[in-house]
Length: 228
Image (cartoon, rainbow, N blue to C red; front, side, top):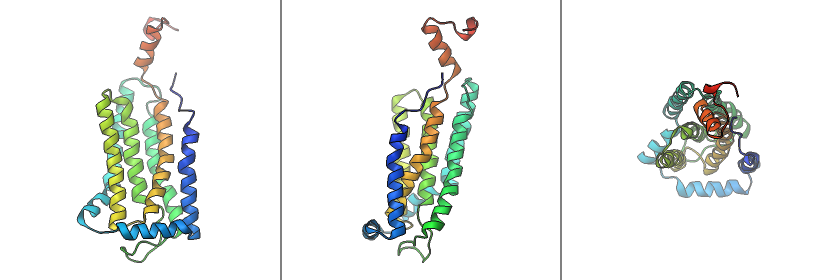
């Protein structure tokens, strides 16, 4: 049987949803958190070459091809190994990525937040599209590849790499002055919600050979010995 998503998933999603709602409300109302955000940005902004390079990790031409390669490999691996609904995890990853601009663009127009003093005068900086792109692209690729890796060390290394890429992009965007810190934090929350769907889809797919082995080891007939 397919693996069910964790029952605690709705509870885990409550925190990023509530935090995103709080930040959005503060941005719209120009609340106290905005003042704290602006002071933090003033202390953190220091444009340099490193921050520019790190911010590029959230660019579509950089992050999306990484996800695309992972989607192709996961789809090929699932089909080659006879996984049930092998198409579901890569489809979920692609859908999550497509939802980033579909959600971010209206939010930018609605909140109409101006940029930091380090960028030319403009509006539409909340939430950070580059951060959301990095979170979903690298996060979805990691979630989809993890079930295919047997070595715990490799799995930990992949997770660490994902975290470093997302934090690197986030730091670069704030350090360069492309975004306020709250723009970035809000996109973390948005990305977490989108990745929850990817995680649920990945958990519903299991290789046919694994299920057959489990049935045989438990004393019930396998698919090779006739109908169960």
